[in-house]
Length: 171
Image (cartoon, rainbow, N blue to C red; front, top):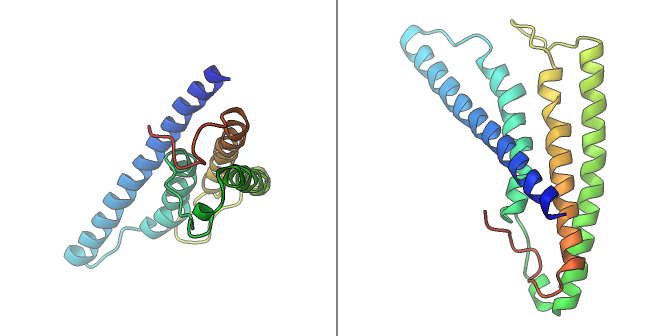
């Protein structure tokens, strides 16, 4: 199991780096578009679509799993911290299992959308015909990465009773 977790951690970092590249490209493209509008009174064609359809989707979905690993997702602890540790373990495992199930179905729908868009050659309406499958492909990848990370959290709850409920696994 430890070998698989280490391999998955490395894979997760690769996709985190891709999401960081998407963020940098989004910043550069938005800045270049703003400068172009100011200096030349002309926007960069397709800049908005590229940012909206590709870079934002990649940024969000490819980083979700790593954010779960470091416990960076928003969480309401007002009631959770008042429960006994055993109840916190059960609630944590239940939450992670429920979220993993939800992201399985999100990933499945994203995979179906990706295959359909690739099969029928769907493109975004606009000045440039951007292929939509390149936008949709990040949804199943990110969803399934997060699903696996959530399942690791469930397994860890049952294997390691001495640890605190999921407050983050430092990098």
